[in-house]
Length: 215
Ligand SMILES: C[S@@+](CC[C@H](N)C(=O)[O-])C[C@H]1O[C@@H](n2cnc3c(N)ncnc32)[C@H](O)[C@@H]1O
Image 1 (cartoon, rainbow, N blue to C red):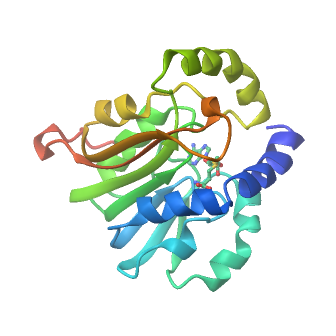
Image 2: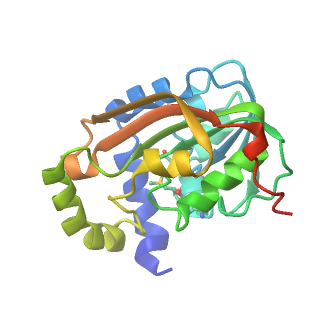
């Protein structure tokens, strides 16, 4: 990774995703989380102060140490203890069925193999555990999609590998989840190609379909 991606991108992301508009959406996605929660793509910890009382511990995964430093004040003030348990959501260093719930916000766009990360989340969720997600991705409208395809190469270069055209609903379903809740809408945080949002809660479709143990 170059200097720009390592040092500048996390600062831009920290500012862009630290707005009051985004915090309103974050409050909605964390609703209902409890127990031990895995967060894939911790970033600078914007979700941390918003976690419900019922969350007892956060297990955080993210390769970005700069983001973590930017979130130092949130970490220091956090009521919820945070363990950093790995650097890569695509290969979680956690046993099967070891967390109550999982949280992913604005990270499926950037994780190189988002499908693999979702399968890993499914593997480590306890039976009945839920994935709460808030993501941007492929827009519902063809005209916006065309812009997303045009802009994606630039976006990937400028925003640390962030994709605009990932169909988050398909990715989540294909990883073996079924939706308990799924909302799609345009957020206020930017132009439509960057703000086509997916907010939802999903549960493993069936315990019988569980993936073979990865390790
Ligand atoms: C746009 S930021 C979002 C950060 C945070 N989730 C938020 O909502 O503010 C995307 C995050 O995904 C992280 N990420 C990238 N690749 C990853 C991977 N393989 N595993 C886990 N996190 C990853 C990045 O380091 C970055 O912190």
